[in-house]
Each structure stands twice: as structure tokens, then as C-alpha cells.
Amino acid sequence: MQTSLNLSLARVLHVYGDHTGLLADTGTPPFQSTKYVHLTQIHFRLTITRPDTLPAPVFNKLNSSLPLSNLHTSTLDYHIRYAIHAFKINQQTDPLPDMTSRPPKNRERAFRNMIRNFFSDLWKGQLYNAACTHAGQPPCWMYEAFLPGGCPGRKSSYIQIAHDDLQRLDLFKPAQFLRIPHNQLPPLRLRTQATSYISTHLHLSNTHTYTLFAE
Image (cartoon, rainbow, N blue to C red; front, side):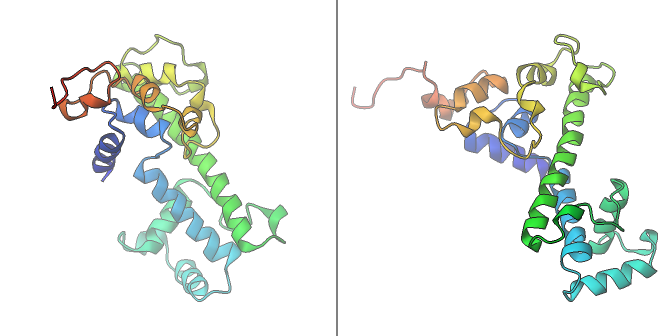
């Protein structure tokens, strides 16, 4: 599914460069990150904001009596609890105690933004580590200290080009230059290192010249 998404995004934008840069610039996180965000949101809704709905007591009763290892890996309960356990999210306390008087919709939106920032930091670390690993270098765990030229390769080149944009809190949103409605494709092609157009997209290039049919 991730490969299909990468190819679909490249075809729609006519940008056939590095998929890592394309996903990061367009604010399209890997499917795994998106899945975990949704799973933690469901847990927050069932245990904190909507405990009076019918699914909430069913979920709480089932999960209070069964350990994670006893749940089938194909069930939604298993995936919710796995996400909570894997990322050490406290299940007992409200992560937003200052918003207890706010409407549930507002609290869920605030929680979603908080979780997105959390997974953005994880994704950011993965981007920097992948850049070095792809180039055969040790992982760059401290990505803030990433030195230009330290890890050669297409992924590390993208990291150097997009360093400032990658510092944004929420990588689930497009980079700033893509939010401005003015000829975004050329800089996107440069940042993702898409240096050539495929034959059916040559007409999109500003430098391409061709003979009109009438001539």
C-alpha cells in the first residue's frame, strides 16, 4: 500500500524524484504513522472523552480482563492496545487535564494535534537515520546536529535542502512553500531531485520546445 501511495502521489504531481522527500514535503506520513495516530485517537475517545457510549464499556471490560498476548492480532482491540503499549501512552490519566470542561470535539482535536507532533518527531528521526543508513553511514540519531556533506546520497541531499522545513512541529502538514498558490512544482522537483520528465510529461517543462500539430 505504501508503494502504491508513493507511485500515485508521483503520478498526480508529475514529480518522479525521491519518494522520501516527496512524502515529507507534501505532509503525507507513512501509513504506519497514520495508523498509530488513528488508533491512539480511538483509545482516547473510548476511555476519556466518550466513556458513556456503548463501545466504551465493551472495550474497557474486554481489555481489563485479557492481557495483550491473549488478543488475536487481527482485532481492533489488539492494535489499539499495541499502539498504546508500544509508545508508552499513559492509559490511566487524562493527557489534557486543562481541557476537561471543553466540548469532547475540541479535546479530541487537541489530542490529535499533540499525537501528530509526537509522531512527527519520530518520523523526523527516521528521515535523518534513513539518510545516513541509505548512504552506508552510521545512523544520525541527533538529527539537529546533522552536518551537510556528512552522509552522501539522495536522501541526505534532501535533508540538507529541506532542513528548515523539517523543523516544523507537524510533519503531517505540507511544507510552507507548498501552501503558497504560486508555481510550486519546480521547487518541489528540485527538492526531491526529480531532474527529468517522463516522455508524456515533457510539455510540463518550461524549457521543453515542440512543434505544434498545425505546423
